[in-house]
Length: 147
Length: 171
Image 1 (spheres, one colour):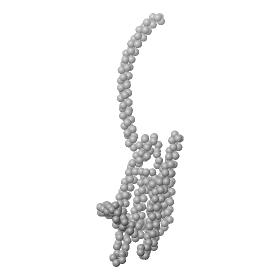
Image 2 (cartoon, chains in turn blue, brown):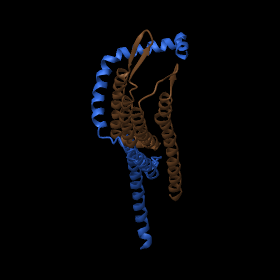
Image 3 (cartoon, helix red, strand yellow):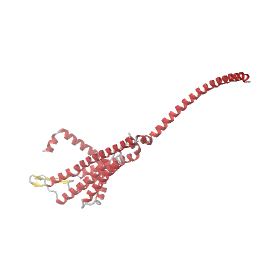
Image 4 (cartoon, chains in turn purple, cyan):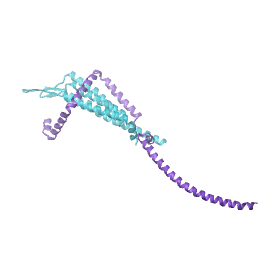
């Protein structure tokens, strides 16, 4: 009765038709793969113990306990940000590139500053020369005084 | 520095508990789906009566199918616990998801021992109807094979991009 009710409903009928259509399309591809799968599964099933259920219980508990231990040791939570940024793949190159650009900019700035400074230095040296000349004059003036 | 260490230690503990709860939830779901529901269904079919006629399965068949349901159900649930309690995109999750899919194939194929794949219905005055579900199972197996390929691809991806995944997890 339940199935008949489902059959009357056009929505269920549409879903069933759609599923059937998909299965019909994929059947030529999927069905032979399934046959191959069944071959090796049949072969391997012979090696599974089919009399003693306790083996499966033991395996169950071993896997669960191993899972608990592994999770306690390596829960896989967040790493240190400092370490991750350094060890990040691709990030180091980016960092390197950005550092390179920064250094280049800095070096250009420094070069520009140096140029300015050297110009200033030239002016200063000229001033110094003047000053030194003045000093010399002074010193010459001073000399007789000392004498 | 000690404050950071303490914070990391606490977050690790929380993560471990969170992972284990998630794993336990999925293990319970799998126990329910792969062991309890089929067990109840087969027990019900074992004692089913249609218009006064018993639809009894053979005792041997019944025992065998229950054995395989319990055996593979336990293995699937255990691997589900391990897989879902592992951090996402980790190699161990990839490995155990793959094992779980393969065990699912075994589990599905073990249904053939029940005789449920070839059903024969006798209708009075009309004849016999045979329903062969083996083809449907083979189609399912093909789909499972595609899932195995997908999981293998995931695993390879997790291995290759291990550093990247770790870095993204640390953000």
